[in-house]
Image (cartoon, rainbow, N blue to C red; front, side, top):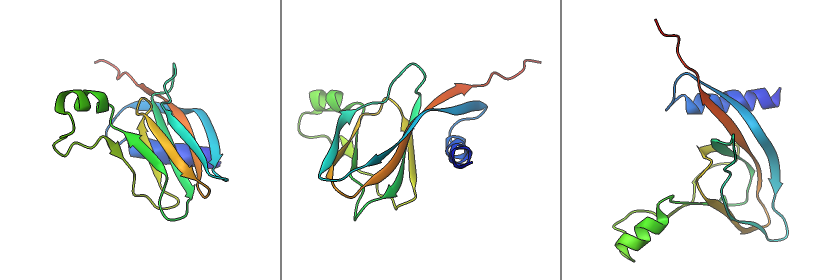
Length: 133
């Protein structure tokens, strides 16, 4: 029941940018960071993982997730140290209970902390072809 509710919330968020699609969980897991745990930079790409999500269950003051601009190396190579305001990293401003859905290829990490609990997962996303008239 909880899984179906979570999937319906995610589908509603995706409808802001996409129409006529199906979505289902590919993987889902819970992360509990204690004793200064962290997660190194990584992506969630796989044969069926098109989108990923992080549901922020608990954290102390700020979430510890950092997202990296997919073009960070290109930005650095072409603009050097002067990025003209183009962010190379992004730390979300969320409250406990909020969710972020993002393309699975977006690199991200979790800084060392002892107080964050998240539910994360990967989503299989497919466009549904419309019947031709």
